[in-house]
Length: 357
Image 1 (cartoon, rainbow, N blue to C red):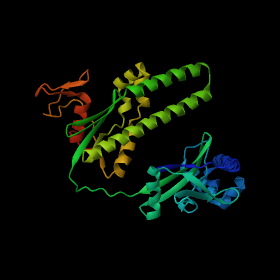
Image 2 (tube, rainbow, N blue to C red; image 1 turned 30 degrees about the horizontal axis):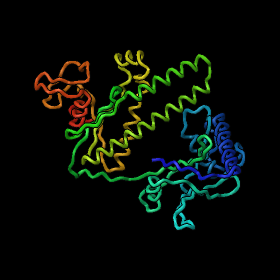
Image 3 (tube, rainbow, N blue to C red; image 1 turned 135 degrees about the vertical axis):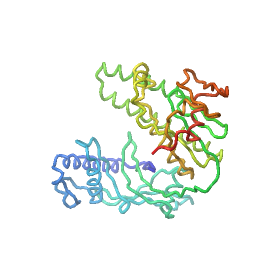
Image 4 (cartoon, rainbow, N blue to C red; image 1 turned 30 degrees about the vertical axis):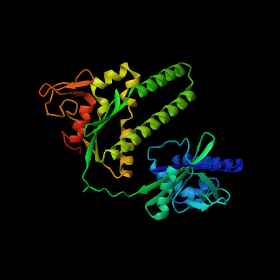
């Protein structure tokens, strides 16, 4: 996972230095991309002839980043990156008896130690490398607006307790109802209406900006929409995992939705409604957020085949030929009536079509 640490009120001189490091790092990366792959520098010593002054640690990590971006033709921005050997984040005692977190890393002038703003949520994860519970990865120095941040990656090993007994939760993802989770008769609903509204609103704004040829504004708009959707997915996944924990869930099952965007019927629907456009349905991100938050809570996640999950009665197993037109599933055999997505979520919990490969 990545922890985003805000630098606490860096001086103007330090901000200019950070920006200069970022500019030099980006310029170096773009010079390297102009070279044949066999001629690109492999060490920081070789890299110095293609770069203005930069710390060796930053150059070495930039070479790794360039090598990892195999299809890159040009970097709009390559932020300075540090590895675990040259970046430290430490907790120090303050004069008033509290604690202050500081990050230290090499810069153009010397190694600096700067205070960072750490929330209580972040503090418990930052203490894990100090106690050996997590392994510190790379740290990237990033500017967002007028603020500077450190994006610190951490790797944690979480043992799954497969021997535990407990409940299984099924999660059905959609666009009318963004997420429906059910476990032991308890169901959690998240409507897709707010997301669809925002999608339509941004689509209208993009259309008007395209007519005006305001391409920079379109790019900023896309970034804003992406941040909004990411925030929504974080909030939903957090509530889902908390709900699972309160219900004693040991296993969460979700559908394997690979390739779902490309069916003929769905392509016709998305042309009519920008708010339900499958190209912008953020199901994968939401699933990944649930997956890693569940892992942190000690809950396993499995993916199942989606075949017939919406066509089968979760109570008696009767299968109908077509999905109900409305929002209710009425079983022709046992006469049970239930919400169509809650029924599907219950089938997913039972893995009626088997686990995904």
